[in-house]
Image (cartoon, rainbow, N blue to C red; front, side, top):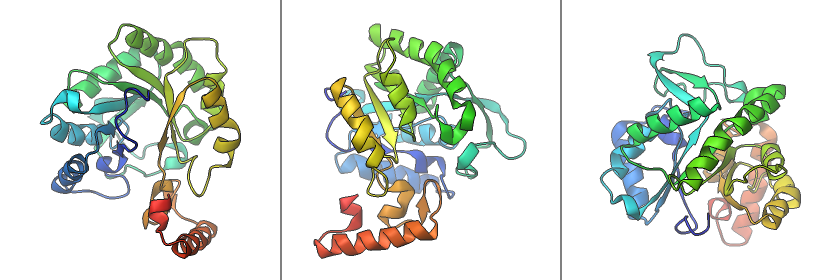
Length: 276
């Protein structure tokens, strides 16, 4: 993916799906425009972010830009239906993360059929004719608990094969997993089947949590010549002046650790946000 991705930094759009709060449309639009004006040319999104809201908002701005000027990735694993969700969503540890997003019902499915439909719907919401990278979203413990391995298997025989074919046909430039845990990536790297081009690992290579990634996962990826996009470097916001850690209100021990890190970065003449 190194040849595909422009620059060191990308723009992740979960907040555009009204993560934690209802963001006005004009603020969302201005945020994407500001990223563009700062030279950001890699944008990552997902149907899951606000049940299609983040993709629509991102597409509204990017559809006015030259398509060859930026790189776009989205994710598969959630199909957004036209019907409205009744009652609370079951999102494992992630609770009410997108309670302010679109009310549409979300189907969690990683089959071949769902993958193709998801891509088709994403293209419409994004107002574009092609995607550069597709990540297989959240086949991990934080959403599925002990059942995550069965979801992984569904993706292995469904989404993985569809995306490998699309890459081989030149429809997309690359694919991989987009997850908040290291284990699904390790499992994928151990497969004999067509290998992904890279991974999007969120929250596991940060100032607050990096041991497992550094000791095991990154050396393994390097050995196999597979690239890693680091997502969530601010640990859901706590390292950038926010109050969330792992998509929840930060507990006392994390707040205490962050204040120690702040003191350390100040001592070295920088901010915790810059260090993160």
